[in-house]
Amino acid sequence: MIVRIEYGSKDKCIEIDLLDTVAAQKWLYILNENLKECNEWKCYTNLIAQYTKVTASAHSKNVAYQKILAGIKGCNEHSEGEKFPFTPKPNMNWTETQEIHRAFTISMTTLKTYSHDLDVSQLMKLKFCDVKERHHLMKKWTKRTFTIKDIDKFLYYGHMINDGIHEYEPHMESERSHELKEEGFYGIQVFNHWRDATNKQGLIVSPSEIETSYKHFLDCDVYIDSNIFGKPYLDTYLENDPPLEYDVNNVEVISGEFSMIVGDRDMRKKFFTDSPYQRWMDKTETWAPGTPIPKHLILPIPLGRIVGCDFDWLGPRKGQSIEDWQSNWHEIVRQSPTSVRVKWQSNYESITVEDPVKLFKESLY
Image (cartoon, rainbow, N blue to C red; front, side, top):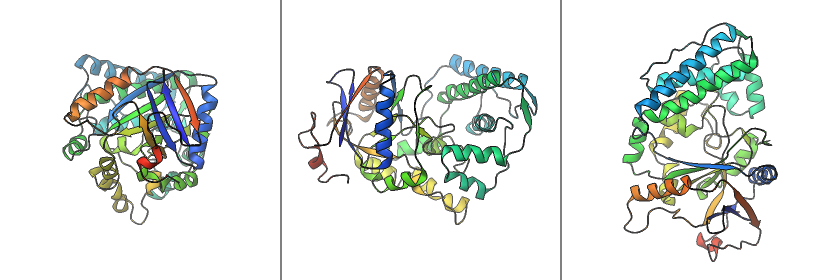
């Protein structure tokens, strides 16, 4: 089945050869259900090797720092017992920002503590749980260290901490990002999210449903995206965060959001098979001997592959520099309309490609 995503008008579109998997079927169903109620989207891009240069001003860095301070102060004022365990600084490294962020995610999940004492076996068990069971076990396995006095205000200030951390991160560089860039991984992640993610219907994809999608992974460049109460593994790698932590996962609740990796397909396959990121993932066997994190729980969940696009999705044109191609994609996404139309046809008809299946010599399934 080909799904055609039309951005605003028919001359701006992406066509996806959709997998015939339970995960893909759930994604398409919930996308169309949510489109009945709202059609306001936001699109943005990240380089695979993001954090190679500071992209924000000193003023915005201070604003983010002040927001974190205000959020921590608010959480402390509206709870009794343990106070927020970390104090932000005007100039922080990745370890310091991730400590603050993890205290936020733990407090928002448990509503009773900022930390946990889970061992490796417990953390690994959480990797095999869906989001509901994972949150249930986190509450069960942690002890109360504070009591919330005003839940609405506590949540408000907690999310202020989270927003401040994410606004602070563009002011930092990552050695791991530089390593990826030096090895030639120039691809771009393109994210398509609801402008307002609240009040959206959602479906849970089970670990077993994710596993059945994994066999198609290297053939795909379109993935289910999910607002994660934590972070995906690639962000964890770039931000020097431990991959075994409970809030590091590849999906939670799906609502129709999706992402793509554009750029040379061989480069993308190498990124997921032979790159510093992949070698880092493989080291989970040394971090937790005998209990590695399975690949299908680490990698993004495949939806399908792009078979038609009005933009240069396979990389720079002949004579075009990588930097110019990346800049063009950033501009394309920045100017993307806020509404989309979704069409699909099971007979593999395409507007942008004469024969999308023959383009890759075989069907995905």
